[in-house]
Length: 207
Image (cartoon, rainbow, N blue to C red):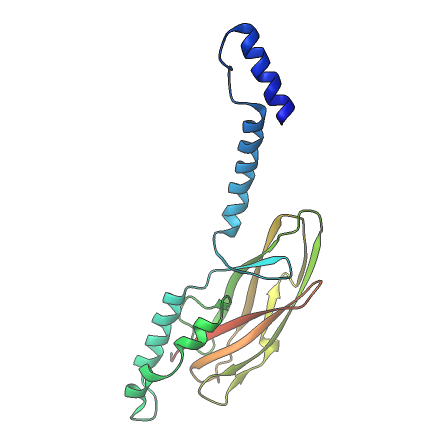
């Protein structure tokens, strides 16, 4: 870029006129900025970077989770003292400890369908990364109930991500009708150069 810039200055001195336009280096920077804008469209939801060289992008909203959780508490519990004890439950610190994750944004009831979209970004400038997914089962926070991992799957189950690119995925499944309302926590395992574990939170409310 230094050679191009000096050539432009020399031409300006000979002609006695200012440079007709931006230097070649500026044009290159503009092109890079345009590429950055394109990539930013897929990275604006990034929650955390990981050593895998992939960035987990998700559409989980902490505020949305809180509203769903408040709806679960408002529905009431069998115990008469549950209404007063619900705000004191140490739920928020658990969410604060998790830097990234997936969760249902809309109310989810027993028998309801789960569809949570997310993306994985390949930060490498040169290496192609192949990722595969596996879902681990969900355990309830306050009860002994659990949801079998076989009820969920990531679509597509595997994908090859080009350098400096990202791909979209969807966690899909159906909550069994017999599952009691609760907050269920599971994991999506991303198999690549290294295993990456993405926490998943399903807030199941009364119908």
